[in-house]
Length: 251
View 1 (cartoon, rainbow, N blue to C red):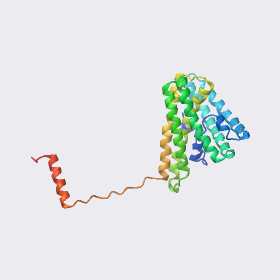
View 2: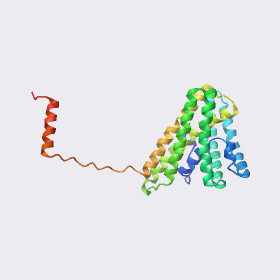
View 3: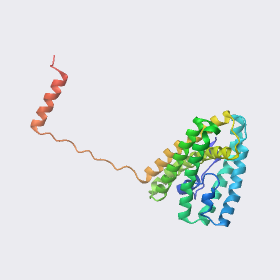
View 4: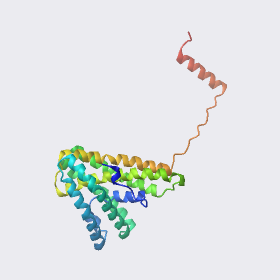
């Protein structure tokens, strides 16, 4: 996928991406019980757009066809998921949003454990479960990044990292959503397409690395000062004797 197809907005922060990653699939019945009817309907209306985009992608038969439509759909997918996240931040209380996010990850993991083997085989199922776990860790990192201070002189480097991070993170979620949609519709994906999807899921590892780099800019590891060891005469003599024994008699 061409990274030029997605540029992170200037006013966007890591916490936005973290929240977008945490809203996998449509709200479950359990999650909807925590929301008002009006809120649930609003989120469903936006989620239906994401749903239509994903459905158009998972039906492709070849890797070439899948990659071609992905180039077209992915920017639209990003904007739709962003809108879903933005509305959720407005209408859902913070503590409820945190619970819904945690449940979203857990629900996705459970779905892949229960249905993934029959739907995709062991390799895809295992990669999907690992990807959900990684996205959960990335979401946690985003909170830490958002709460840390960044020196002014590091903002340009941080922006470059953020572009890479946002692209890889949302790409991983896109491919994961393709699998979730395939399971929910009970429409198997073609083997050639699944190979491409697995590659897309692996971008979660790259996203985690970029997120870690962003956190390191804000909380660099402290320099450790090494204090030289001082030997007394007796210790130096013992060291000399041990070295001599190890090397053997000089020729």
